[in-house]
Amino acid sequence: MSDFDEAALSAERDDLLGSARTLLMSAAGEDRDLPEMGVTPMVRLDDAFYIYPSHLSAHVRAMLAAGKAAFLVIEDEGKAQNIWARRRIKFDAELSEIERKNDEFDRVCDAFATAHGPTMGLIRDFTDFHLLRLRPTGGVMVLGFAKAYRLEGEALRVTAHLRAS
Image 1 (cartoon, rainbow, N blue to C red):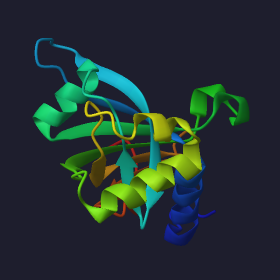
Image 2: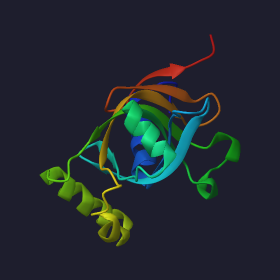
Image 3: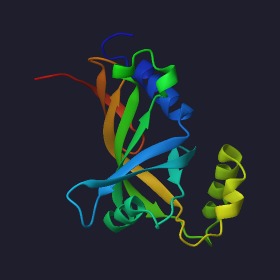
Image 4: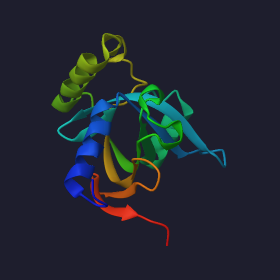
């Protein structure tokens, strides 16, 4: 791959996102100087990211209060060629809640059940859980040493090779 081949880099991005089943997430804590962090299963439908977390967790309450959070998809340790240079995508996103009476809620919950198994049938009606659509605003993709790329917009379009200045 040349220094900046947008098609090849987009394919790398899509491969990493396509293999991910969970997102690590972080949001500014209300009562702490440090962020609240957590992990949650996710699905992608029509290029949108969805999560279904419980507000009983501090990181979810922080995300809901802020309306935004930072997310991370990272290559499985067992599949990484080099543990120091795991492929990863970090992105910031705005959140919007999908109401339970919306057709989109049922469609996405069905996708969660298909992707992640029968637990969704157990928690689907739990009112502490919130179906959230993530709207990425930008981020960074790291594919190895000296291989960091800026991502922009909801589609996480690869726009630049990041280099030390």
